[in-house]
Image 1: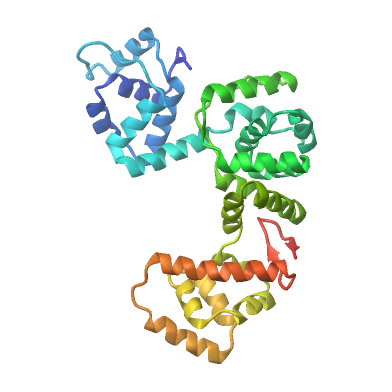
Image 2 (image 1 turned 180 degrees about the vertical axis):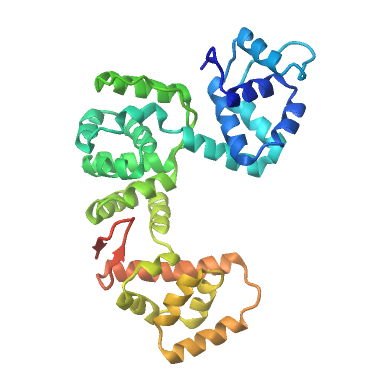
Length: 338
């Protein structure tokens, strides 16, 4: 994307930073808050290249910021990434860049936001699973979920696997797919430039979380065959120990009945007050006394031990759900499924 003739204030800052020596640019970037840095980074990624005349006009406005030698009119993700790392360190830079990518992601497919799920299923019919996955990863989870549910079983499984294992998508590939679909959909809106689209397990989980139980089970069973590791990772994220606060009282009691007090004490360590209160309110007085003693005797505990204890409880919850002994609330809805 080339710079427009009239730049916004954030775009001007981006152009100035693109023209500075990287070390000096990093020092300037440090003066901004992370929110401001995100906005500036987004503009650096969008602009990529700036016409020399536009750069010249911008630099003249910041006449006190002169450069030795020629001007660097190149932006893009690599430049933004190195600038952020120099300014905030690699860990914070990754967080900022990730939020920028998330906020910019999906814009190429904004023209699909108003389409009905059935229309999208028809539009995507015949496309490769990787292509469908790319589109669904751009959509809001609540929008993508009914589309995924509407696909044929074999296609749905392949698409879910593609979303869950997706890495970064080249902007050019995203643009080609968006433009092709736009022509087929007879859309009027012009596609916007975008940055890397990162798929992975979490977008898949968010989509499945909003699917009905039949779709969820069929999908996970298919993934068990095609990609067992991905299926297990998805299951682990679909349900967490903290989700116990969403259960019916009788279901909480059913779960806790078979959990050893020492395991429960470990799982509770570092949990929210809401989780702790639910557990204490749904066990017998005798078990509560034993649990309190276990909690008091706990010293410093490795996070791995806590996670293992929570995983044991989650496995118990899954087993009880599979047996139909308890019901679990999923997503943001009020519906319960056995």
